[in-house]
Length: 264
Image 1 (cartoon, helix red, strand yellow):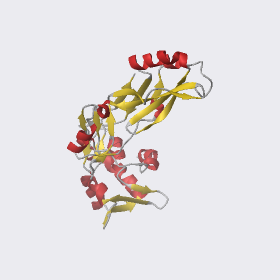
Image 2 (cartoon, helix red, strand yellow; image 1 turned 120 degrees about the vertical axis):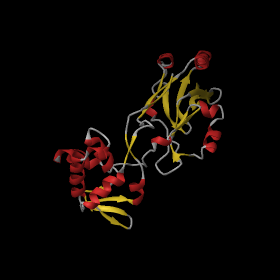
Image 3 (cartoon, helix red, strand yellow; image 1 turned 135 degrees about the vertical axis):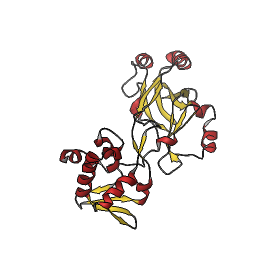
Image 4 (spheres, helix red, strand yellow; image 1 turned 45 degrees about the vertical axis):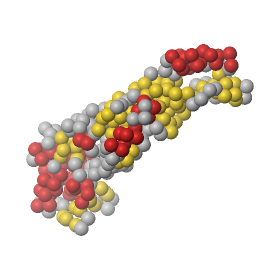
């Protein structure tokens, strides 16, 4: 049992954003909204995109330059504002990583002759644009470049967002907390629950072994890890605290359901 919590505890409080409330996921018109727990704010992911040049090519140092943007189709079709308004959404405006975008092999090969620094290059996105492609070329290739852009993708997008199924089970934190309060491991305060970090880690892991049904899974470590993430742990000060808000929020036993973002 010692190994159970020693393995996980140092990273147990390493969450940098609010947890997602997967049961309230809304999917519509190529948009997937997953709110943060207790909020109507959260990221909107897009499953359909269009590439859009930002205008005609311009002259730069004797070359021609064109930026191609990857727009969510929902924005191009003016569906976004209605979706946000209808569902009372505050968009967290999250972008896929720029590394998820690449120039297509076709456009990269066509313009591979360009000098260093002027070959096709991906630029970071600017919401809602997922990413952009910077193209430099000489005037004799302009018609061919534009023809390719009009006919086929010049950008590829490949990203997998690690979401959980909306049907994922919810851990009953209150029942676990009550057992640990009864056992003297946790005590109530005006702001939530607190206890010695090492006592909380050890006794909660022991409870997971002895009463796995409290943790909703045949593998008690999975449920235990989900439970421990509700705490703020300070192993140096030997404190474990769970806010009143955290104690009342759903904690999911994640059934992985990654969302694949793809274009080109």
